[in-house]
Length: 411
Image (cartoon, rainbow, N blue to C red):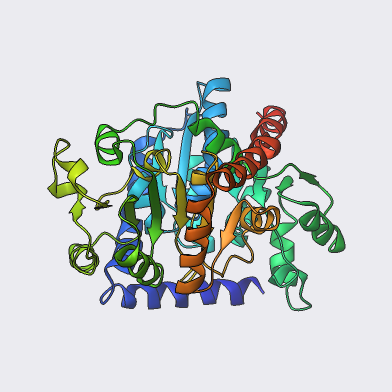
């Protein structure tokens, strides 16, 4: 089975290199990995003590960040290495101050795994949520390097719980310990004889809780909002924007709108702005003094959305009509109602908060319009709904504390 898996990995890499000729994102994926071993050789010496954390993308990095921050405090002499699988994680966080070294993870071939671990020689390897790479885990196990999976969540549809999933089950069983988000995941793992588990919730709740203690002020948002109620839509896709634009173009004029699209390519931003009938500004093209003259503000950069959510009275999180729901916890922590599209299954916090009526799903234009009418007519409902979200996060935080207590025993 090792031979078949490695053959598939090499074939996949060959096809990814071909795809890079036609896709800018795939080009980043392929070309970024060309420098990985050079970066590691330059940045890590044989004398360094290394803690390695691997995250698939940006969301998983955010889950791992509370752990990294605590490890840096407890073990200041260690170097923190963070690797990413996806360009959408690496390109945003390649210069993060949270880690000493940031690289792409080379494709999971046996040769890459041996070379990577020989260069880094980590004292501890932490994988976030879904990242199960058999060759890396095999070499780590052979070298008796502790491995921990954090914020993991499992479903019965996954390969580990199928009759044909023995190879991936074997990889899963190499982990020293697995921290899962819920009891359902723990029971599934127990069904395949994996019992070195702890239920501790999602570290993202710790991450977003920390946001409240930071300075979230933005002068341009103070001027733009200017005391009026504000609706913020974050990480929107065209499917989301079609509904939002229809509402904005026909809605009352007392509400201010902020839209932060998932894609900020110039042609898409200009197309979005051109479809809105109300007075609309792009953040990059407006000054802070005159910004309050506009009714709609489009955020055409990255890195500000979390702070912008702090100005919202109502938030909308995109992806529920498209490729996958984005982070609902970032607006929820500010104690405001959060509206999403209909496709939220598999996102535990969204499922929980839909059930508790803090997150409000809509299915179409009419549903969105009616929901907004109801919320705007009842300020007390806005407050009650927001309080549900804030309480949920406060009640469920603390996962990183449990994980750190265990990691200390390994270092």
